Length: 277
Length: 303
Image 1 (cartoon, one colour):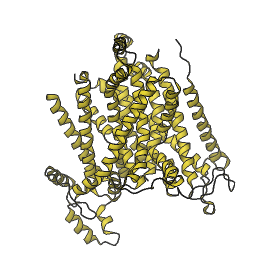
Image 2: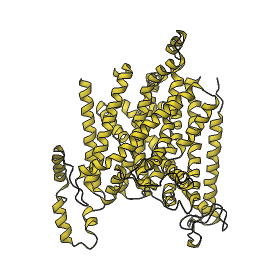
Image 3: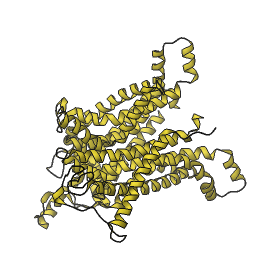
Image 4: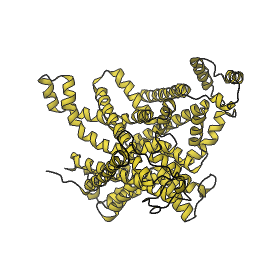
């Protein structure tokens, strides 16, 4: 029986493609219209226009604390957030798959260390680990990505271990072994394709997790860019009385993206779930 | 018995590794507490003197050894800023955090399980659809974007609750609400899904055909679902603690979170180590408790 695409997935991918178009438009605007590839455009400071209301002074969403157009700052934040979350998610999922598979195949001392490592990362609030790493590496993009990868991979590793265990017990894997497929080839050609659907569902849901973690760090003043949505929210919090619209617009923009990702992820999970059939 | 000893050993190992990691990581990270405490005008001689006083001039490993020896006596050291006793400071700052976390976790558990059951019973009816939509929204506003919105609505527009500080019942409302909204949404979803998994299983059909009332059946199903829900709470615990810390920093609550953030900012080593030890021990205790309760409820998990 073929399953139909649910409304959830349609709505989710619709929202996501809107954000995608937005990010792409900003990319064009930044590199081709207002700036060049070598000298990209950055939102201008204009102290005379600080905290302008939406639809005033020719600014669609008003301006922020430093008088930058809120729409431009939001767009910069969107591309920044998407870039970080995609890099981190792909890296963590790859490490997770590899480590999860190795946890089945490797000798027992490796399993012990693997368990201990995973438990440590799980027990510690990920924000603490990230703060610790950022304290050592300093506030840079590299440090941020590293911190998010360290806290992110155990989740994927756990899922990948469970899934690989399930796949390894299937008869076609045994068949592949019997005709002499090597370990490396078995991993890349048989195990990975078999577990990738489940991993993709978790990656879609994981992206929103990374966006939230990154924004949380930014909110606490540990972000790597002034355009982090979290950092902007932290600044908006201080002017909540004077300019409540900034916090509202920021929260809604961020929530929209996360809702889109959650809808798509949930829809995909139901779509791939064999139990429902 | 052997299993219990194994678990205890494992817990100690985890605490020890956490402690060791934080000890070295924070000392190797850039920034010097002594230079911060003395200010920029301090002479080299003063810095050296204070360092010797605090024992920070020794090699890392002998510092570590001294620290471990003191720790076995229950001494967590004194803060670098102000020379307060870390243990006393921690006990004082733990209260707000524990109050916040306990109230919000229990409230969300009750609320989430109740709503989840309601939604499960009325699967695909209006209530189910609306509550799923609301839980999706609740999960999509991170704590730090939810809190300003709540402040905006309840404190500024309606003028019902104070914006920050700590002390009376009025102060506790908004932080609790901030924490309860996302957590109860998670618990609600898990309860609903687990309920739907169980509701059509043979044992439920049999109890129903034997003529047991719906309410009694619901209670029994809830009991079967409880281990899963508790496990989710356990997994969410680190999220809760992190969330509590962020909430504390938003509402200016003098709890563990603000203590830790200040400690990291100032490189006040004993404070950071103390917070880490206390929170790791708390996790361990809660994990043990949840394990124990799960075994009591569902003997199958013992094997």
